[in-house]
Image (cartoon, rainbow, N blue to C red; front, side):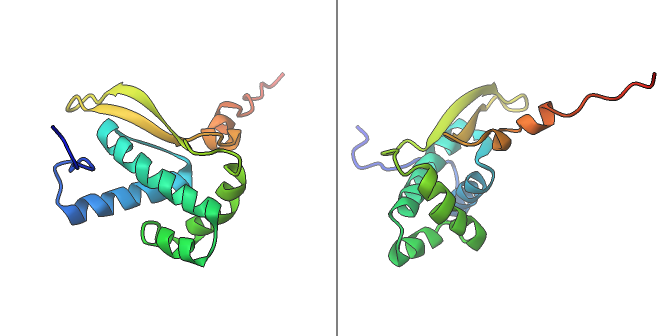
Length: 137
């Protein structure tokens, strides 16, 4: 039985694991989607959801709590302004995990961790809508 076993260790030391997860959450909040392995995505999801919830609550104490994980001031500002309004009416579930198959090199299961309700410009559709090459004629 796995009583009181809270998280995956991911075959890393505590300091390495925490630094990696904090960096993953920061990247997720900056780019709104990251590609990683499935176990890492599941661990980062819990941390990211907590940061967005802190952003929704607002206040100096919650800014300081979020600053423990996200050390970039610009991204913190984004959390406490843009994400606060975007997820104001959502009671949780700010992230989505999409399974992508297996990595070619070692067979690790890959996943896309993304924020739900993100705008179309963040999804990379601008590159698909590039103007066609003009033909001379």
